[in-house]
Image 1 (cartoon, helix red, strand yellow):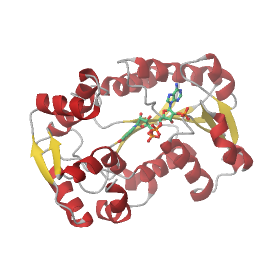
Image 2 (image 1 turned 120 degrees about the vertical axis):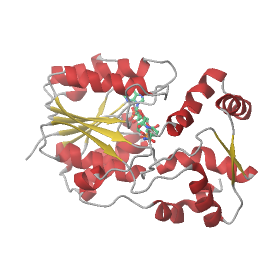
Image 3 (image 1 turned 180 degrees about the vertical axis):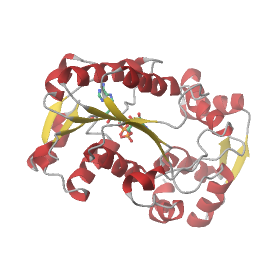
Image 4 (image 1 turned 90 degrees about the horizontal axis):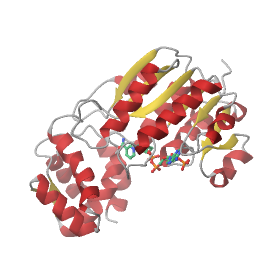
Length: 296
Ligand SMILES: NC(=O)c1ccc[n+]([C@@H]2O[C@H](COP(=O)([O-])OP(=O)(O)OC[C@H]3O[C@@H](n4cnc5c(N)ncnc54)[C@H](OP(=O)(O)O)[C@@H]3O)[C@@H](O)[C@H]2O)c1
């Protein structure tokens, strides 16, 4: 199989790791890989290895025709444009339309668990993108990625400094998975010959409540960490005060807790092992590697 494989968002954290897995784990020749990004200048090391680096910006659909030309399989990395509801969906729709025009056969998309009818305020972009793929002429693999273990870097350093972790998630659990495992899964799906229309939910092997995480983190770093359960409104107010974010932005981030409380990211599946043949990294192993960084 000698398809040309294209990765969008190639300068992002996930995109860079996907390309690294294509090259160094799956040993795909660099000449079969296209790295598409808004910032080609950041990927000069990949260009030096023989990867084609092209400019692609979903906000500039005209850039996508030349960027996607010649690719048979494309990884559409969901963007981080969550500043305006619906903007990210417009970007993804532009990418899907351009992939169809360019003659791409198969698209792999990074979605989230249970995006339909979700209380998470950024979920409609993912649900809408999945619908756009279903309505397109393409075949696809939807990777419903559960939350990264690395997301804990956003909340735990501050929480550890104070000794308190504010949560509105109740006893809802999260089946965290390491971002690098998700990159490996995306690389495997992209490099496969699969031309079906399939959806997998990629999770870690265990799910943890905030208390479960706090207990393990406190033991690993040797500092106390109490979970303080608060109402959604108090979480929004506290987040806005601590960060200076407008209340609308804090409301979006607080909806992650509502989603967790509703049990929508606590499922543990075997899809990662089915796709890659490997077990996902254990949280305890991730923690052992990252405990110093969690102290900020
Ligand atoms: N499952 C989770 O826990 C979780 C956590 C955080 C984010 N995510 C989602 O997963 C995606 C990848 O995660 P990450 O860690 O790599 O995030 P990241 O490092 O913040 O990367 C953001 C990505 O968005 C792309 N992007 C932004 N605007 C774009 C545009 N106009 N056109 C094309 N691409 C655009 C960037 O591509 P270039 O810079 O290369 O152009 C980059 O790949 C995120 O963007 C977000 O949708 C998931």
